[in-house]
Image (cartoon, rainbow, N blue to C red; front, side, top):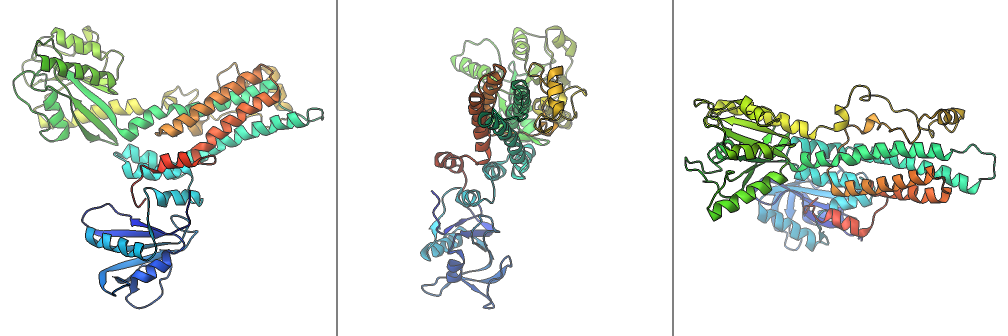
Length: 504
């Protein structure tokens, strides 16, 4: 529950740094600041103006640090409450002392995410924007940061609010039918309701289906390097990382376990797994490593298949080719600095369909071409499917709904002509095309909304009473509202904010 007390916490990461920030929020923030901070010129602290002064122990008058302080009056502040911040020197002992002084003066130590939670509860941000704050802090790549910033700017919230408003509008017209069925009022037919719900299903599904690529952009694309022993897998890993992460020797089978590390490729994070070589082995330890290789390959988003171009194809190479069937990835025809025994055509002849890159893992100048090819493979993996459709649908403006036409005769004429019927697939709105979600909570809420809308469509087309249709329509509106926090519970809020860091 929200307690109207005053909280304090460091707003910067722990450890030694040049500057640290101690943040206060709540009704006594200014009073507590006055107790522990003395402006150098004995002037009142003007809101949003930095003042130089000393942090002092009010009990002894001892100076703790020379610092800057600023105050921000609510509701125009981070949390919607009165907020005060002290920018002090970044030593851990100094920060702890200042926090302790604030607690001694009447503040309470903030819980993880409590500042952001107060911002949500006080209407400064909605729940999706609050989650974006945590995602910005945790971003591992430009793509993850872009999703978080887009969400923080309100793009997702605005689109969800728009869809929810359309759902609520359908419910309102159904309520009119329930309450005034005997009146001479132009009301939508069941066919029109079904067509409108079908359009909403298409729009919600586009956002829902963006989760898979959004998760890749947020968490990174997992790539497993597979190949027979001594194909150059560990050398490739070291080359991409720019460090000797894996042991490289001329002895086949050196890698016995999965080695994981990550690298930035353009705007994306790539999580690389170097694995044991694929081959038949009588060595129990190596067999365990190979089993882990196969498991890693199954779980990977992307496969990097390594082949030794200086050696003829063996059964292990054919096993690797089979692993790539139906999977996104890149084939590396390694050791091109040696006399060639196989070429790309040989891999194609045995069923290889993914792109093939002739390569030498010991030639550092080839790293750029490898990174470029991998970046292209990742970009193809995370590209929105809707944007890749033919130009007949891409960029097309969605047709106006029956609600937008205010139930004029045009709606009836279109319905009688068969236009907009639920039997023809509805095109998603172009405004949905680039929205991407990356949180399971959003995906689950959209799944519930989709299920409710599909039930409503079936009920409408089955000529069920409006009360039955309205129940499912309201369930969809509730699910959409839960994304931005229009409908939420303490348990949901606790689950969302418990993973935030202290000070946020």
